Image 1 (cartoon, rainbow, N blue to C red):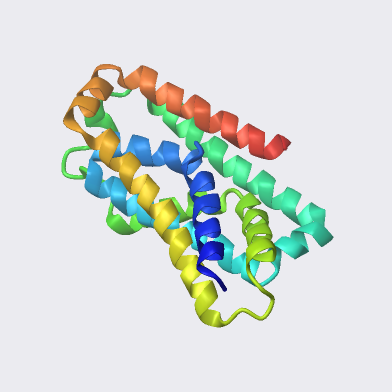
Image 2: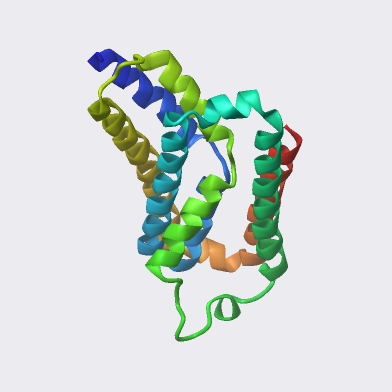
Length: 205
């Protein structure tokens, strides 16, 4: 497999990774509330979630979705319900002061919890399996060795985790966080509303 093919996969997937979605929204909000370190751990989970969908595509899940559309539809509804649940929580707790959102002595969720949240958020949308399946059919030869797939997984993790680490860094800056504290209710409701719209879009597409 040529270097040009790897470069094409890198840039095609990077464009998908940086497009606004539930993962980016959660990375931004987590970093606003809990700081860069916690946002970075969420980004790790987001990258791992993308790799899980890529591995599923390796094993033909994208083909299965095409052969059995109700399976994809069912997974979309489950994922949409999860995103709507997260949106509801954001909206409901938006008016609460920061001290109520994060009780004293429990300043942040654990690293493992954040990693799992990132994975779950990625897995809530089954469309990446179809996207990755298309990438593999387009750029990867049928008899490609195992190392090729491992390199592609590395690219996917680097793009998804790396981009969301950048998002986490931007939204963890002190000036950004001070602005968030001043407009917490509005910002949380905007995040919740956007996440809810993404959930509805997933269900209705």
